[in-house]
Image (tube, rainbow, N blue to C red; front, side):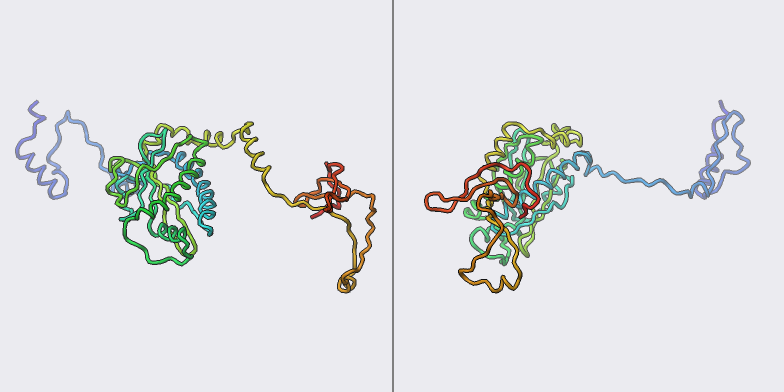
Length: 350
């Protein structure tokens, strides 16, 4: 046992060798029963390139899977197009809504990235737990308000103040349209009941989740003429954690391919019944030269090969649909439909 213990001189020699970067003296032989140390790696082996390592930031953990992120991106791309159409009709001006990013970050990073004051809407989205955030940047919000009040496309100076009561009432029209289109976009996944709880101007006064909690930030860029601005939708991870399986690719495809139901067929049929279509009756066709066309005067008669007993062609939006006979009804020129055309003739063109 005594042979395994180093003497004081051997310890001092070992420490001096380590501090000098050299090797142990050859006269310091290890005990006979001590196993041999493995050979030290050579300089060539130590210089070989290491594998690429990606650092993991514990402050920004990626809790939402890539599959769910792709599903959210696809869902809100369609929402952006529908919201742009609705907003264009409301403002009577062309509005472009572009989905710029779908990212996950902490709630504190999201809050400190916003301007102050801003239009910070706290949303309730039943049956989801917790709250959502809808932020509308003042750089695009005030031009929209100006447009609603009858202003032109020219953007005025950007106001750095909270919204007034009248402006909040006008902004509610924009947020209500946003929530309506968001409900339609999510109805294939979950039937959301969206509602604005309150509106704040200072985003740091609203704490819906802990600062380090992960949120999904969906950003849209709105363009009206020369004016651009951002609209952000913040969804905390704990809000959509229960329905994360519904945002997978397989279920997403299944949701997107729902079969038609009697209710949807009835709704589409009722919407189509009130649609306006163009109806035309072709009385006759003939060919004349350009010289004859230039020489036409009021009262001239153009002869055709159309027989008076031959039925007339009735077209709907340029497609041949019926055969009819000419006549009069209550003092007006009219046609009486004789039969429906199942296969349009080759000569039936727009």
